[in-house]
Image (tube, rainbow, N blue to C red):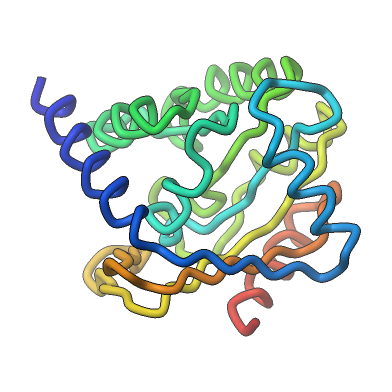
Amino acid sequence: MKQKILGLIAFTIIRLIGMTMRYHLHFKSKEDEEFFYKCYNQKKPTQDTKYLLAIFHQDELCVMNYFRNRNMSVLISVSKDGEIMNQTAKLLGYKPVRGSSSRKAVAGLIAAIKKVRDGYKMAFAVDGPRGPIYKVKDGICAIAKKTDTKIIPMRAVPSKVIISEKSWNKAKFPKPFSRMDFYFAPAKVYTTEELEEVMVSLQDS
């Protein structure tokens, strides 16, 4: 019950702040932009509009409002903190899959593959659940290869932000009325090493 209440509170905060945001999206090419919006505007699962969204754990709160109600699944840890995020994600219209790199990893991987094969987009905090920060784990690339699905690497840069310096992931909490810049790398099937390199490079965009 406690996790459900905290999830509801988190949902309310994300929605209220999200309503004040000004989003600006940046792509490497027109082709990448067209592919993204084709997928983004399709609210039902389809095979030709699915992709895997790769973000770092610290950007989660920056992107959750923007991708709500977009037939997006998300892999969430089975920890107590993960249960709060699970409740929040459901309220935002996501389709959570439970599992992580450390607990119930195989079950989470199998469930994620099934979701993607059913045509769902899927978001991954690729350095979660416990880091190290900016170190991409193998899961997303394994799913991309297994399902022949493109990965879209992404970073979020809010103009006004509070950063949790004590947390391992340096979590970002965007302030109301911020400008939110999203930077995207080309959509393709990456290796783990390639994905880490391109995502780190997006930090300098």
